[in-house]
Amino acid sequence: MKKLILFLLGGGCLFAAQTGAQAQLLINGAGATFPYPIYSKWFDEYAKVDPSVRFNYQSIGSGGGQKQITAQTVDFGASDGPMSDENLAKAPGKILHIPTVAGAVVITYNLPDNPKLKLDGSTLADIFLGNVTKWNDPKIAALNPDVILPATDIVVVHRSDGSGTSFIFTDYLSSVSPVWADSVGKGTSVKWPTGVGLGAKGNEGVAGQVKQLPGAIGYVELIYANQNKLPFADLKNAAGNFITPSLDSVTATLATAKIPDDFRFSMVNAPGDRAYPISGTTWLLVYEQQKNADKGKKLVEFLNWALTKGETMASSLDYAPLPAAVQQRVQERIKTIKY
Image 1: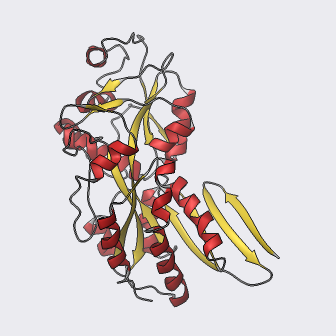
Image 2: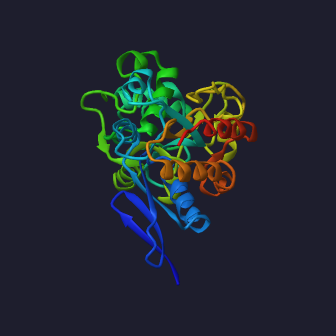
Image 3: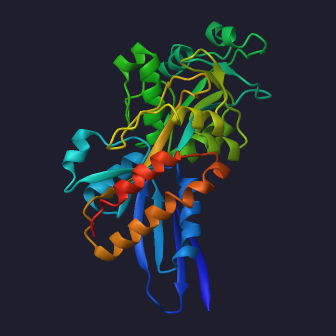
């Protein structure tokens, strides 16, 4: 008799299917929290497709995913920020970036009655730089003339771990604020302005802090705001329109992306009337030359399934699937994986 067993371990997940005493092939991965909800669903569904393999994925942040795939302590990494040339050069082999889905990083907050706010890049940068410290600051008030804003302190919440969500957020701020670009910059880990904000681990941690702290503001992937019933702001995009983060606005942004052959690309502050400005993709990181032939074969089979059947599950979890043409390009790249 077949049994499907689900283990939840700390911040990660282990999906296991057992058939009698037959041993299964275990494929280990670690990294981004941004795509954790969709990856969890994929691993669960794939256990039904191929019970001979199970995936153990630890949701530890993109920085951790990049480090572990470089050290070869996992079979695949996951990151919402592309690896730099410098970090790729440290790896013992060629690492491929396999894009999977795109999503929105939303600005969420905790205010009385949680009004719908509008923000722009300049104001958002000033908040996270510590230059705007009260909710009724004139810069916020000017963008929200119909909202009664409290004269309370803003409590900034940011990631404390190496984070692809932070990469997307700081990439955006760097693109709209020269001061931010010069003083903080972009990365999975940045030196946050001294004395500004509280750190939290993972998208889960930031969402939890914002939910608990009156006056808080933070950034999380869209599904984490929805799951925690947190409000999020409309953001002014490059075309001058205030855009609500949604599946449609991320899809509109993804349609404008210029995607190079190595699939490392940014889509923040994209052109287009309907583009949401803090959008990003997420990647699985795999070695072109697999060390273990059996694992390599199973990993390739899973990747092909994810880029076809898996993509159809993305929208139900507020992620934008890759366009068909991009899916085809990625599948061609998967064919180059050797095992």
